[in-house]
Amino acid sequence: MNTESKFASLKEKEREARKQIIIDSALALFAKKPFYDVGMRDVADEAGVSPATLYRYFPSQEELFVEAFIQDISAVSKAFEGMVKKDAPATIEDFAVTYVDHLIQNESTFQMMTYIMLKDNMDGQALKEFGAVTRIFFDGFSSLLERYGVKNNVRLYAQSFIGALSGIIMSYRNYAGKDKEQIREHILKLTRITAEIYSHKLMP
Image (cartoon, rainbow, N blue to C red; front, side, top):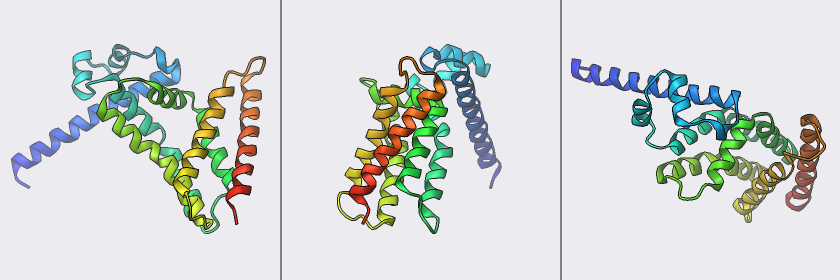
């Protein structure tokens, strides 16, 4: 590698390092206060950069949020992969509980996901990246069904299942008169019932 190439490689590594600092700063803020209360200037201040610098790395708020969401969900995506690929694959209930409990325990992840899902006129590139990361859930469940021998309408069942679980969280995350642990227990109870219904329908 010549000197010019080395310099270009170093600049790219520095750029990626700065970009990662911004993403880490956004995630740190999401852990402190609601996702929807975090603005781009807040992230810039946390990262120690100017708003102008921040926008050079992330031209829109949506792009930053999607990048943060992708990194935040990486742990559960690896868990899904392990559950599907092990010699004795996980049950539908195990998969469902892993998905739902991760979103319950990581409020900022759930907030980012629902914000992006519901936002009108979202930036095209951000929407494309979000679609790629949400396919983790659909691909994981589709692979699980295939391990159990399901052959027909696998993708539709996966979309229906993930949609049902997400709907349960949205419907009961602010259950009146319940504390956080009671809400979690109720959501997981509904999750297990939903998994049982799909298991009876889909398992040989």
